[in-house]
Amino acid sequence: MKHGVLVEDLREFKHLWEEAGVFQVLQESGELFFVPSNWHHQVHNLETTISINHNFVNASNAHLVWDLLKSRLVDIKHTLEGVVGFTKEELIEQYQ
Image 1 (cartoon, rainbow, N blue to C red):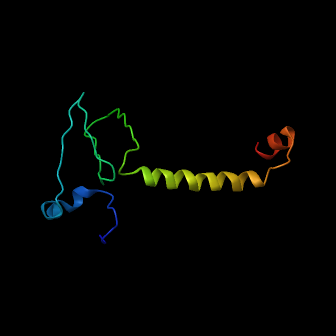
Image 2 (tube, one colour; image 1 turned 180 degrees about the vertical axis):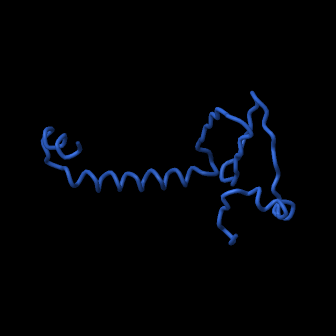
Image 3 (cartoon, helix red, strand yellow; image 1 turned 45 degrees about the horizontal axis):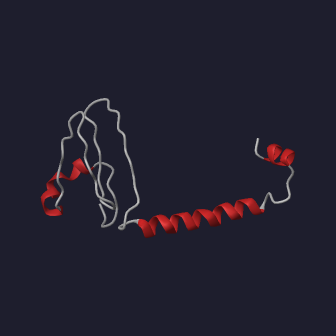
């Protein structure tokens, strides 16, 4: 495990948890758990589970979301350059 590399299963490194400040939470049915923005975390389900997640923008990550949106706009514009002037029929034929 190198510095900066996320491991596939953190449980394989339990001997390092205390030094790294890792903590474990057992979430029961019906409970909510808040993971702050930019926190690395892993989830291991003990049984078949339905998980409902919600990610949101706040002051700690707004700049990252803005950068992502700007980069995606550039990607979209680049893609559209290749189809400018196509008729509806040509677009349908191109993307089927």
